[in-house]
Length: 289
Image (cartoon, rainbow, N blue to C red; front, side):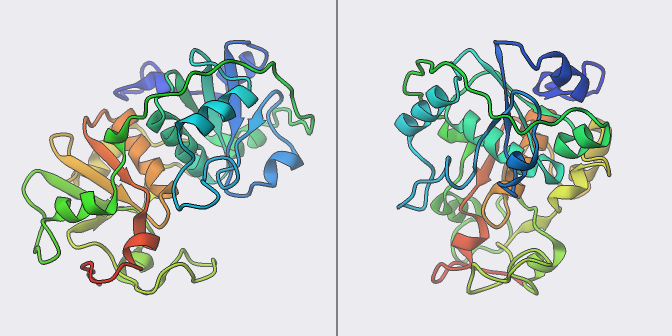
């Protein structure tokens, strides 16, 4: 990845790199999928599973687990603060990117994505196993979160200039990474999914529609740095701006956050993980169709 042109090429590793580090004690490979049953069907040898719903979400409050529970999860997975975590998953690594963003939100240091994810690994006929590994429990101190990469609804309302604002204030870019029909309000979820989760369709005023998957190639790898820069710049999303990204529940926007912040090096990018399920259900927030 060193000659890729990405601002931080070290955050991406190839399937070859992963194959060479399957037994590296300093590396923990993590599978995070939308379809949480895929791990049981077969996974990269030595990989552990992170279930985005059962492991990362608070069971009562609509929020993530707190720092103490995050530390406990790391200890259970045999991860120390110095462990390099390498994420991969299904569907262009969207849930892998979500887990990556959440680990960064909790301040974990060395983290990477396997470029191409599960799709590329299988296409190359690399080995899969159903064996579930067991690693020694580690000690993981309670982390210090990094809230600067997350946006809440109140932040987004301020970001767009309030409930009655028309157009974004200068120096800001808001990116809706959902499908075009979700953006227009014709759908409340992606096509071929149950249309549930919100009472109102549409998009946040001032948001540009840049579907998340436009950043990926057919083999699930990321597009080149130049292609990505052109994609976002054509919609006015440039590194000099304060950027907020959102989708429906924050997972697709995590993929775009990874592209903008990690691959392209935009200095200020926040993921509004409450996204449309929160915005579309809130009384008196502004909506455009």
